[in-house]
Length: 231
Ligand code: CA
Image 1 (tube, rainbow, N blue to C red):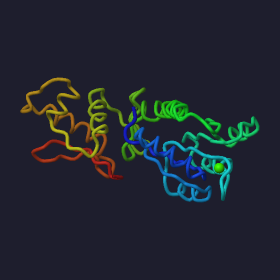
Image 2: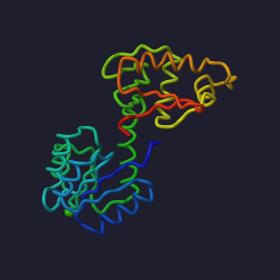
Image 3: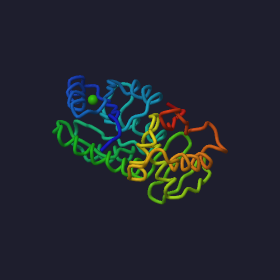
């Protein structure tokens, strides 16, 4: 469902709870960073980005509401689940006001937390990853088939679009002409024909000629590679 292990920030000052949660999440193949203090969490958030944040309310340093408001000034999309020991309706309202997406009352069932996390991640990922592919300054909209580079529309034919999509999904990896033939044209080409090279050249002209850095490169004797300059 997800491209890589997702990064979770867990902000919880009760060490026992934090450690148990982390263990469970790591078993679910999430990558988890713990902050036991609100100010430390804020410092971590200044430098790193996360796919989901689990936030206790009563914390030393800076409480969960303030932290959530801080998160929302920087990233309006990241899902935030708040934790509290109190089952008070006021807490819930304050949490949603601060920008939380969901709320768990301690003690809670780990499975329920997982279900809610997955629901939030799915919602975000359907929008971000399902319809949009990005590499460098290139944005591909898979729904309306529009491609832009640095905000300029790049008009592509449908074959060129499929070719670019294949390159982007395999970025930083050498793909052979046979790989391209099989995955973009859906047939075993006689790789002696130059159809693939012709199309790659069409695509390069449109995508790379007037922009830098160049993204699509020839690997002599092997095929092509789309290099993401940010990696
Ligand atoms: Ca606490």
